[in-house]
Image (cartoon, rainbow, N blue to C red; front, side, top):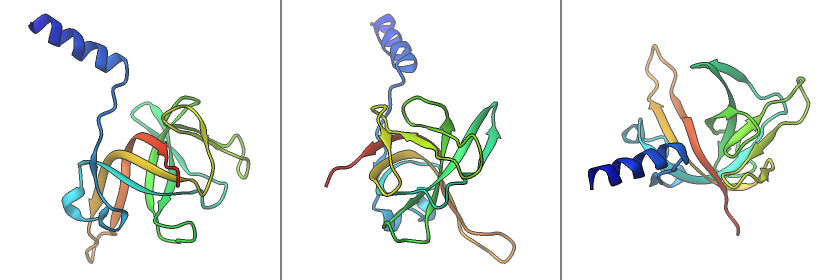
Amino acid sequence: MFVRLASLGFICVFAACNPSGSSVPFAELCDVANSDQLITSQGYLNAGDDDIPCRESAGSLECMLEFAASQEDTSFVSAYLRSGDGPNQVSPPTMPGSPFQVRANDGEPLNPGDYISLTGLTYVQNGTDSTEAVCAFREVRSIERVEG
């Protein structure tokens, strides 16, 4: 029995099993109680401008996208995706101002303004006199297009 369970765990790791996060409405996403939790929330992929900031993190490139409550919203939650051409990844622009491509969990491309469900580990910090408030999906695990 133990061997069977261990085998299932091994398969899950290498098949990229994607556990669902706790569902949280966008308006409650930045509550401090949600920090360091696996959260799923719905909102809009807001590309902002075409120049997406990317950074080196733990030996791979991560790019920051904007996740907003509405298409017109100028306030947003940062969402960090790994760079690449696979599912749940973003192909960063080759030059500033050139297009980027975000791929959903099914590998299909997403467009700015698409309504999506985002699952990932969050980081939330309230602002104080010496620190700035932060609310972000620090590790996106799944992006799915939501119809309707």
